Image 1 (tube, rainbow, N blue to C red):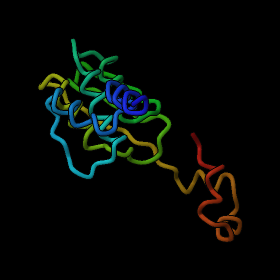
Image 2 (cartoon, helix red, strand yellow):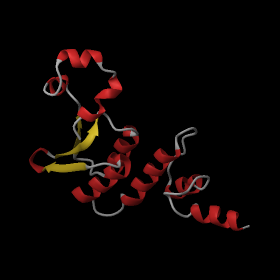
Image 3 (cartoon, rainbow, N blue to C red):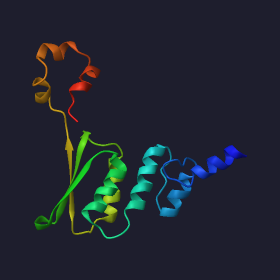
Image 4 (cartoon, one colour):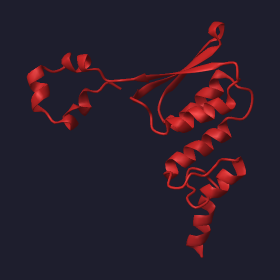
Amino acid sequence: MRVSLEETLEQFFVSSATWGLDAWEAELGIASVPGKPDDQRRSVINAKLRGVGTVTVDLIQSVAEAYERGVVEVTQQPASYQFTVRFVDTLGTPPNMNDLKAAIEDIKPAHLQVIYQYQYFLLSQLHQTLTINEIQTRKMTDFAPFIPV
């Protein structure tokens, strides 16, 4: 009985919910996608919970960080009616990007445009650290220490 109570208690918190994620999604009006990993479902729920109130740069940043789990920088360009979401310490496109875009579209004012900026590891950055012979003789997994964060 104790195990059942503990498992039920876990469903009250998004970070530990498993079978209770369906109830969270229903309560927040989120369409459940069969087969979507629990961590991605939790990101959608957390973003929906954070996306309440007046839309500010801080609110958009909070929603973006619910998906990314990394450093996200949001800057606004009022003269051009847009803002930029830049992923600071993630290389490439973050996972669950479609859900993040949908969440931001849901909370941002309709007249504002959003621009997403990604970081990529460039071959020229690798050449600054290693010679071409060293690059050719190593496995791809050996390059993790050279990737800037």
